[in-house]
Length: 151
Image (cartoon, rainbow, N blue to C red; front, side, top):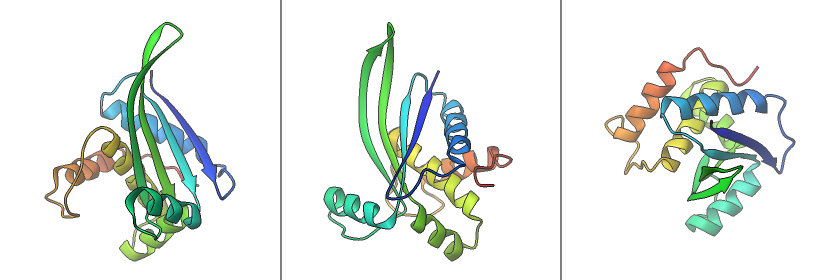
């Protein structure tokens, strides 16, 4: 069984965080990973800019960051996996949604899938549709199209 913890920094934990947790669990099931303990952090632009500056040398906000941990540990007699953290900037999410002319819900789901795919070891060189990671991202979004996070 996978587990997802959603937290917030620089803003209050949204009322819909439980639906975000449920969506992330569905993505993990779709990827057929087991015994993952995933952390998702929702944050403001300032927090994201600080993280982006500290870890990527870019002193600006971004939409999503994945911090890979990739460690196993034992809990309750079973081995668990800590893939790392997915960090999502809610202000950048809103800006992306407006820029790409999609709903904020669709953009949030895209960022969740994107962050999880990075933690699952995937990467991309550019943002073109021909990138295997981005192709899989859009496939997963299509398969989970009926899912909603935001009210």
